Image (cartoon, rainbow, N blue to C red):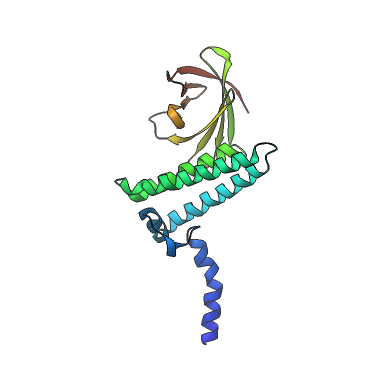
Length: 203
């Protein structure tokens, strides 16, 4: 009988491990890590983001040029993100802060490194000038995300609540607020330029 129960525990061990986060909970130190170890959904989000991060590293390692520098940058970025996640102890709602951090990070990794096929692509002509083009690639991540391309710049953003249309916010004030075939695009330049845009084409 003991052998039977031992066998059952061995069979169940992978399932238990699968429910936990990607890190060793016996070494959890921050309030964020301790809560993640106690919360099955946060643990799932941790595994999801870790898988996305590993996939991004694979993409970086396959770059023809600048792979090592890009890998170092991605690793530093991930360390910075973890540090930011652990700062959630300052938030009024620790769990919501942690979950939001994971959701945004998944979107950033998928959109920046194009880890999936985009759910949609739109090209916008802004400021009445067809040459002033903004390309947006939309991804069906758990929190919908977008990849911005304008000239040589690339940025990523996440869907935020709004009363109408769809609004995505990125870094340093960049955003796009889409209402049908029209959008308001805000650039992160020092002046915070904002343009009315019209849909030029769909990908």
